[in-house]
Length: 387
Image (tube, rainbow, N blue to C red; front, side, top):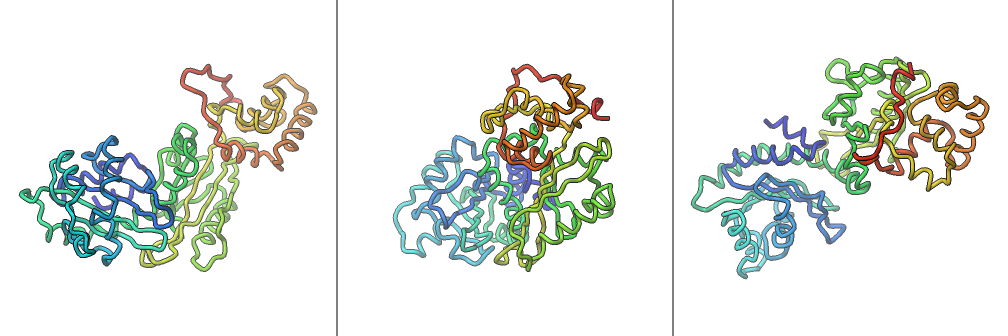
């Protein structure tokens, strides 16, 4: 089951199930993972993972009562990583002997009257903790749990570190990343050797089409075209190097074998540890990929308003997002090819884009909302028009 923990790094919906499993292993009732930020005083919502006993309604109260100087978890960073602490041991060690404000709520809400936990990582920016709740007359045995957590703890540390870039992106871009699958944006994590660690459903679907991306021996992410494959491999290796000065992402355009006028847009961002969180065992890349054939659901209204595009230019822009060539656009919209070329040049001028690929990037970066489920669909421009 430990390998299944890594699946939660990219799929937030899996955390409850995976932590339910861990709860069963520990023979406790609840397991909670929280990121404590030292940079900011507040606890961000994306920092919190719990098993199914902690409901969404309970989360706010849990954070308010459980992460204060009256609770031991506030002191977990003083422990050695993976050192197990029982009850109010850490709070009392720090001189706070006052009655707990957390335990009465915990017992009322979950039936538990004890808590224990450990520090999973400790960095200048913050620390990750695991807490588990139980009854002192139940089957939970602290010593046995501590032995188990010393084995599982390093894996949880790695999963949380892999999960953090995705969560930070989700926190930063909000609604856009909440609808990644509907928007048809694939996300994956690969090692320095291009080995695929984990991917969301959309990334898996894009690879399964057999058009541009491919999986080689040992689940190595590659491209169908030899030139594209070398570019992808070199970019991953460059971003993964710990001594690399590259701090920003690299963007690649991988040609489609189905339509020479379309391309898959890949963004690659480094996932390198800075202070030994993985003990030097992991460096890799976060990969996002956009399928040019799945833009029929995009609402381009935000682009129109932001760049003051005309109705004619929006029609052109919409067709470009779907991978149509100038001649295909002319045929589809009933325009002359020179008119299409002129209006496309006007779009480039207004948006500051230099080519079609940059227009695709703008459509993603501006977090364009999808059409609502009740909206009338746009006229379909599918693969048949692009072949």
